[in-house]
Amino acid sequence: MASAPPPGGDWYESGLDHIWLPYTQMKTTPPPLAVARTHGSRIVLADGRELIDGIASWWTACHGYNHPAIRDAVRAQLDAMPHVMFGGLVHEPALTLARKLTALLPGGLDRVFFSDSGSVAVEVAMKMAVQYWLNRGERGRTQVLAFKGGYHGDTFATMAVCDPDEGMHSLFAGVLPKHPVIALPRCEESVEAFDRFLGRHAGTLAAILVEPLVQGAGGMLFHDAAVLRRLRAAADRYGLLLIFDEIFTGFGRTGTLFACEQAGVTPDIVALSKALTGGTMALAATVARRAVFEAFWSDDPAHALMHGPTYMGNALACAAANASLDLFAREPRLAQVAAISAGLARGLEPCRALPRVRDVRVMGAIGVVELDRIDGINALKARFVEAGVWVRPFRSIVYLTPAFTIGAEDLAVLTEAVVGVLRDYG
Image (cartoon, rainbow, N blue to C red; front, side, top):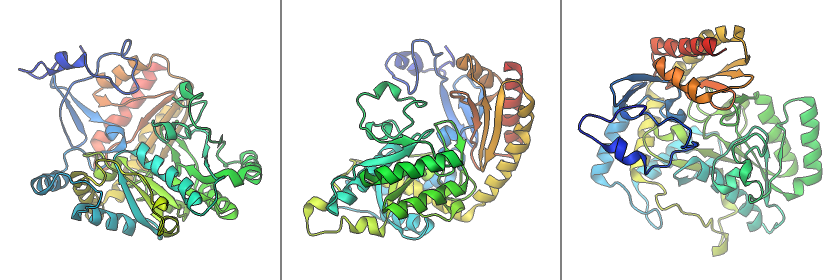
């Protein structure tokens, strides 16, 4: 057993035989660690050990765990109304959040559709894009152009726009819808291939979909702002919609509130989730420009967007998100990201001299060490726990995406653990 249950409780032993864990071959993977509580950048295990969290619970806990402002907002909302259906009814937390989001996003992104996960937010964006053309009387534009190295979610529509070769969804290749996935146009060869593809196939496309600046779960792959400007120009040239998946990059992770700001580019649709609620509640948003929304504004009921998650616009989640956005407004989050960026660059630099390390890269509060390969990934994960940190390598990547509120000492412990563990591993 990897972590003992709390005294007086048998929930770990009695429940583990009934749970199905994510991304896990449960026959061969060591049992999960039992967590008792969290605070700041710390995860406290049921056996009393305390780990510094290096990945902010899949990049969500941007303000750290248990921030009192978010906690108090959720408690107050729970007393008033935890949830009410969003069909024919609205409430103040959702409308306030929609207004705040559109005020923060680049100009023209002013219609918000709420859902409850990043995968669904991207699916809604794809559905919007295809129906945009259907509502305009063009039935042949049914495909979405995506890029190698990309990851957009685990539902069927989003699996179909993930990297088909390098991603985790190749098993389903025969049953997924077909969408073109090509190299991101970042060098002369791939730019020429991109232009050729659009010259031949633009008439079948509804939209272009990309993770701006960082392709996250596909391998923490970085590209520069010029790539996004190239995509915007191509979308305009061929009359296509441009979708940015900012599930990972949104809310400060790359150094600006939204990654698209660094390119001076506004997408037609943007998908948001992860850090939207500060790591407390499930919530996502798909935000469209006015021109997209107007294609659905009609006397014809068939032109409506027929989508509606049961917990759409959940009041508790919206209250958490409003409190999270307020923290961005009154606390120095982007300055903290800049300090983290410098700390990651400084702390991970020694990894460049280690055997098997292919690259070290940093953008905003993202630090990446890429190896030639990782053998025995479970053993590597266990070494990080022994070092007192929570770091989850995947494929050939060891990465850090800490909370923006992490202290300098804790950040140094994280980078020192990465250097030390990889030195021993090499």
